[in-house]
Image (tube, rainbow, N blue to C red; front, side):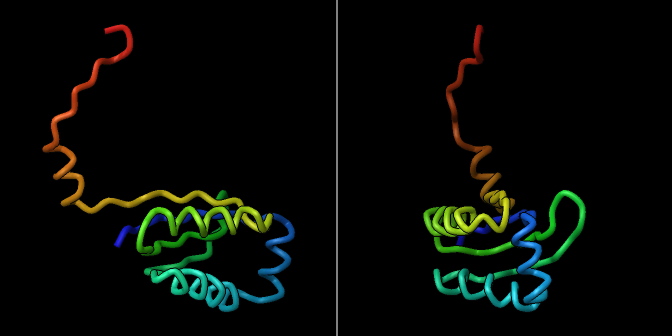
Length: 106
Protein backbone atom coordinates (compact mmCIF):
# COMPACT_ATOMS: atom_id res chain seq x y z
CA UNK A 1 0.00 0.00 0.00
CA UNK A 2 1.47 3.41 -0.93
CA UNK A 3 2.82 5.44 1.97
CA UNK A 4 2.68 9.25 2.21
CA UNK A 5 4.35 11.85 4.41
CA UNK A 6 1.87 14.59 5.29
CA UNK A 7 3.14 17.95 6.53
CA UNK A 8 0.54 20.50 7.54
CA UNK A 9 0.22 23.93 9.08
CA UNK A 10 -2.99 25.24 10.58
CA UNK A 11 -4.65 28.44 9.46
CA UNK A 12 -5.88 30.66 12.30
CA UNK A 13 -9.34 29.06 11.98
CA UNK A 14 -7.82 25.59 12.04
CA UNK A 15 -5.79 26.44 15.14
CA UNK A 16 -8.97 27.60 16.87
CA UNK A 17 -10.54 24.23 16.05
CA UNK A 18 -7.51 22.40 17.43
CA UNK A 19 -7.71 24.39 20.66
CA UNK A 20 -11.40 23.47 20.96
CA UNK A 21 -11.08 19.74 20.10
CA UNK A 22 -7.60 18.97 21.38
CA UNK A 23 -5.01 16.75 19.74
CA UNK A 24 -6.93 13.53 20.42
CA UNK A 25 -9.99 14.94 18.66
CA UNK A 26 -7.95 15.75 15.57
CA UNK A 27 -6.27 12.32 15.64
CA UNK A 28 -9.71 10.69 15.69
CA UNK A 29 -10.78 12.82 12.71
CA UNK A 30 -7.67 11.87 10.73
CA UNK A 31 -8.16 8.19 11.59
CA UNK A 32 -11.78 8.33 10.35
CA UNK A 33 -10.80 9.88 7.03
CA UNK A 34 -7.88 7.52 6.37
CA UNK A 35 -9.56 4.29 7.52
CA UNK A 36 -12.70 5.28 5.61
CA UNK A 37 -10.63 5.06 2.44
CA UNK A 38 -9.13 1.70 3.39
CA UNK A 39 -5.89 3.08 4.78
CA UNK A 40 -4.15 3.46 8.12
CA UNK A 41 -2.26 6.11 10.07
CA UNK A 42 1.24 4.86 10.87
CA UNK A 43 2.25 7.84 13.00
CA UNK A 44 0.98 11.32 13.78
CA UNK A 45 2.90 14.03 15.60
CA UNK A 46 2.12 17.62 16.42
CA UNK A 47 5.01 20.06 16.08
CA UNK A 48 5.73 23.76 16.13
CA UNK A 49 7.65 25.82 13.63
CA UNK A 50 6.90 25.69 9.91
CA UNK A 51 4.76 22.54 10.32
CA UNK A 52 2.12 22.04 13.01
CA UNK A 53 1.39 18.43 12.13
CA UNK A 54 3.36 15.56 10.58
CA UNK A 55 1.82 12.19 9.67
CA UNK A 56 2.82 9.06 7.81
CA UNK A 57 -0.22 7.36 6.33
CA UNK A 58 -0.89 4.35 4.12
CA UNK A 59 -3.61 4.65 1.48
CA UNK A 60 -4.68 2.19 -1.21
CA UNK A 61 -3.63 4.43 -4.11
CA UNK A 62 -2.57 7.95 -5.12
CA UNK A 63 -6.13 8.84 -6.13
CA UNK A 64 -7.24 8.31 -2.51
CA UNK A 65 -4.44 10.63 -1.37
CA UNK A 66 -5.53 13.24 -3.92
CA UNK A 67 -9.13 13.00 -2.67
CA UNK A 68 -8.02 13.57 0.92
CA UNK A 69 -5.72 16.43 -0.09
CA UNK A 70 -8.41 18.24 -2.08
CA UNK A 71 -10.99 17.87 0.69
CA UNK A 72 -8.64 19.05 3.43
CA UNK A 73 -7.38 22.02 1.41
CA UNK A 74 -10.94 23.03 0.50
CA UNK A 75 -11.77 23.26 4.22
CA UNK A 76 -9.40 26.21 4.57
CA UNK A 77 -8.28 24.92 7.99
CA UNK A 78 -4.89 23.59 6.89
CA UNK A 79 -2.14 24.11 4.36
CA UNK A 80 -0.78 20.67 3.50
CA UNK A 81 1.97 18.92 1.55
CA UNK A 82 1.79 15.22 0.69
CA UNK A 83 4.99 13.46 -0.32
CA UNK A 84 4.92 9.89 -1.68
CA UNK A 85 7.37 7.70 0.23
CA UNK A 86 9.24 4.90 -1.52
CA UNK A 87 10.83 1.81 -0.02
CA UNK A 88 14.46 0.82 -0.55
CA UNK A 89 13.31 -1.97 -2.89
CA UNK A 90 11.28 0.50 -4.97
CA UNK A 91 14.29 2.79 -5.39
CA UNK A 92 16.51 -0.20 -6.26
CA UNK A 93 13.97 -1.18 -8.93
CA UNK A 94 13.88 2.40 -10.26
CA UNK A 95 17.69 2.49 -10.40
CA UNK A 96 17.73 -0.67 -12.56
CA UNK A 97 15.34 0.75 -15.16
CA UNK A 98 16.81 2.15 -18.33
CA UNK A 99 15.76 5.73 -19.02
CA UNK A 100 16.74 7.61 -22.15
CA UNK A 101 17.14 11.30 -21.41
CA UNK A 102 18.81 14.25 -23.07
CA UNK A 103 19.59 17.22 -20.83
CA UNK A 104 18.51 20.65 -22.13
CA UNK A 105 21.10 22.06 -24.50
CA UNK A 106 23.05 18.79 -24.68
